[in-house]
Length: 197
Image (cartoon, rainbow, N blue to C red; front, top):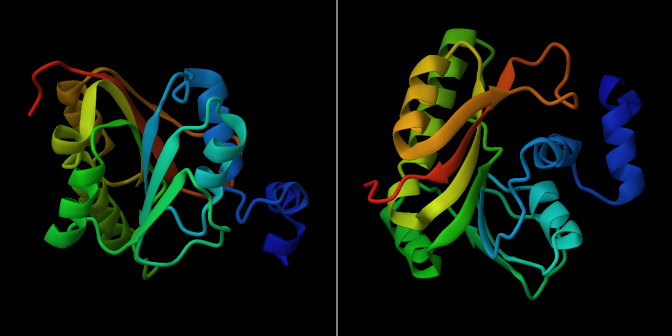
């Protein structure tokens, strides 16, 4: 019943978004302007598609979104949306993404499969974040930005240090639309450093 009565879930349903996560991206955009001027975006862990849909609806001119996930999107076809189904650690998927690069922004709301044991879940989350950050060098243009979701309890400090190595600015942020009991956090890297590899 919590999901059915959740304010953000109901709002997403009313506004035609597949999931409440859209309001996390909206708040980060209002705070950090990460979508301003972007022409090409990689959306990792995109399913069911709320972040991709938000970008396609609200950013003008409409950027091209390349969405990747193990699960299909719950979105209609769109001329500015390319969907690649698969795992970002798979060499074949990385090759497809390389053919779409460079990107102005990498978004990742991806979460690992969880088992309810926090130490295991956070370790899986950190491994997923590291995989996403591994895409920054080959796929993200100089000056580009990145947002990744991480479960608190994984080594957030280490992730922020890695972001600081790749980007001029880095910080963590917890949007209001995160559930109060959730231990998810977003790490944000702005302005990829020149010559980073």
